[in-house]
Image 1 (cartoon, one colour):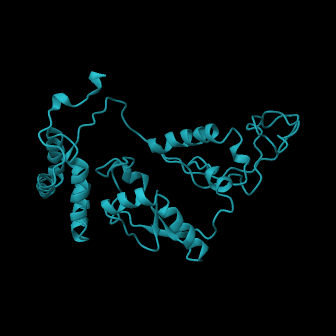
Image 2 (image 1 turned 90 degrees about the vertical axis):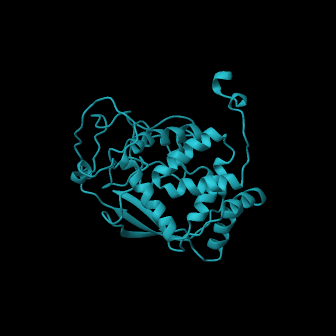
Length: 287
């Protein structure tokens, strides 16, 4: 399952130049915009959608469903609206409610379980580990992070800034004969059994890797945003030496020859570095 949050107000972007100017002149622009909107009752909201795929499909689709560079085509797996998220209150104390907030994908409500996505699995460990380092071992006791319903977990106790009684004299382990406890029946979470070969993996790019970028380029052209795209990519590439530009243009050409042609034309019209000598460019081997 994939989650999608779609803003009800729609999407509107700055151009690259506008974004750079605003970031320099008013770096708090977006924070203030959201704060004022909420204060005025213009609550920003997002429609929550999900895409659902039968695990059996994962073995037959022509792409890795856990590849972060791929999407699940909406025509094959349409968005299903399941709710709405609304921000309707500003924090009374920014440090208390925002700076100390600690989110992690490992904090799940009953009925939702993790997939075999390697990126998700890694972050389920790294996020709470980072929060313990950043906020403290008992960050989950803070009001902005604490569960609304009490959670009995004697495995998680002690440490600096413990202030809730620390489970008193309870033993340090569950199901102790010294303190029998009543357990809530765990919610069943579906388990997917994955089959595959353990072997050397090649990261060589295949024809399949160009299918979705090519479709995105088609959408850009339909929405008349292709000019902004070409401009932004070209400006990022303009600071590179020519041999790097040529290699990047070659890659874009595999998506669509028109992209490489238009990038080359834009770079020729707006060069930043001319005839740079690669021998004078610093490389790690020179350190």
